[in-house]
Image (cartoon, rainbow, N blue to C red):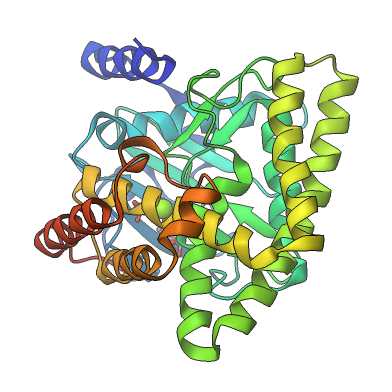
Amino acid sequence: MTRDEIRQAAQLEFAASGKEIRIGSEADLPLPLAELLVLDATHPQVLEAHQGGLTGFVYRLRTETGDWNIKKARSSSLVQNPDGQTSFLNEVQRRSEFEAAADRPAGIVRTRYASFQQRLIVSDWIDGQIPKFWDERRLSSLFDLLVDLHLRGFFEWDVSSGNLIDDGNRLWMFDFGYMYRFDPKVDFNSNGQAAALFHPAERFETRSYFAALLEIESREGQDAALRAFVLEKEIALAAYQRLIAELRKQGAEASVINWLGGFARRWQQALSADPAALYLAEGWRSHRLDLDDDLRGQTCTRRTLARTDWLIEAVSKHYDALVSLDALFWHDAGLTRDALRQQLVIDRRNAEGWQVAVQ
Ligand SMILES: Nc1ncnc2c1ncn2[C@@H]1O[C@H](COP(=O)(O)OP(=O)(O)OP(=O)(O)O)[C@@H](O)[C@H]1O
Ligand SMILES: [Mg+2]
């Protein structure tokens, strides 16, 4: 079993056991518990309702003490895989660890109350925007947060824009459904060293940034997208250099240092020599991974289709470059141009069939 499978099994067992995880006390609630348990969009103090989420319903509640996020789990997640089915439990677990920590990471929302059995989470409402576009401040703030979480042994798999809020000063995380524990001195991520493809910058690029770059490509053209990519890579490079220095200081294993150092070296070289080639390789990886993820969870959207079209075009125009950059991975590695294109056409058809009504 992989590390992720061991965690999944433990979480499924916990969920079946009927055990409770509770954070905070009823006295801290902004409204009586009984009222919160039946709260929905029709409540007079609910200002906003986000009912399109895959795991739960989120309400912005206003009381005289401030604005609150009331999150309620769906009885069953719309994500059709074990991680999706246990994401609410996972979120409560992570929140209880953050609340127990002596120094909570900056940029992690405070949990005021949570109950796994009551399927309820109450936290502060963060006034701000979901980052639809990215500038230097937002990117730097995000990478600070990603490095901090990494050093503390929290690996966030779903670094998508919809899971981030910019309060004008810094970025915040508030959705921990796919954040898992790991040991940063020994592991690459929550799957030990078994899945070397996945790291914080990759997670952001895959779940968020390459979707933004896709839009820049179509609105402003390739050059503008490449400039935005270079900005992000410069910030990622500085963040990884800090991360590596800190892990080295803490006595992390050489395999971990070399693995992270490999990314930093590659980015540094590409930034001075050929950023467009790095764009192609990282774009391929991110769009391919995100497509795979959407197909596995059967949670495809219009953006899934746009990503697939990008991939099909990349195969048609840059197949040789992709091969020489060693960008093709997993079942794509070794496929001929025609076989790869054919595979993507099949993927696109499946993505058309598995469209979900969110976003
Ligand atoms: N504490 C908060 N402060 C401000 N806005 C929030 C907060 N928590 C959630 N939101 C808003 O509600 C939306 C959904 O929240 P969240 O991501 O926690 O739910 P979800 O059910 O996990 O959704 P999904 O499964 O689609 O990720 C967010 O995209 C954000 O707009
Ligand atoms: Mg979310």
